[in-house]
Image (tube, rainbow, N blue to C red; front, side):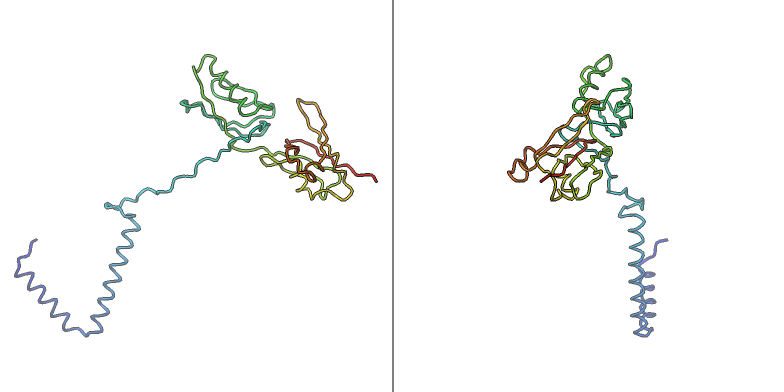
Length: 238
């Protein structure tokens, strides 16, 4: 119902008269309560509406965390228990997260099992692309990421501070692992450190003169270690 100007003036007159009749401290208290109430209502409105006109909660501006992928280190050799994220450009249905099985293979849509153990990610990429060309895609473009590294260990024996197994990170070298093992003991024969490595099921042995690395600065002679390597530091005989 609309009020005419006389009714509005009368209401203002009544309200003014009531206010004037109140004690001054009470007027201050009422004003303060009114201010607090308005602030509380405004805060509730913002909490419920999150700044929207219709009170509908606005979607969070935080994006969900993206999946974590690792670009494989150069020369990385795929092994059992690695988890690979394989993407085929333009073919989302072929995107696969595959754990390398103990038999050395992964399984992909359309092409089935593919040998992975012993290959670099680039070699596996080429193998998958070749299989996809066999009646499925004309020009497949495959990208391979490491989603989870397998547990990669080397074992250190002999004249170091703390012999035992050590977990490899991305690109650990012989001297880095020796350092983590507490360094050489005073009687270590640093000139003939043995590394035993399995290649295609056969054990091979190499010897490293670490004095050339530490004493002469030949850093290029430091050896990049692989999972399963066995390092033996012999005793020096006087």
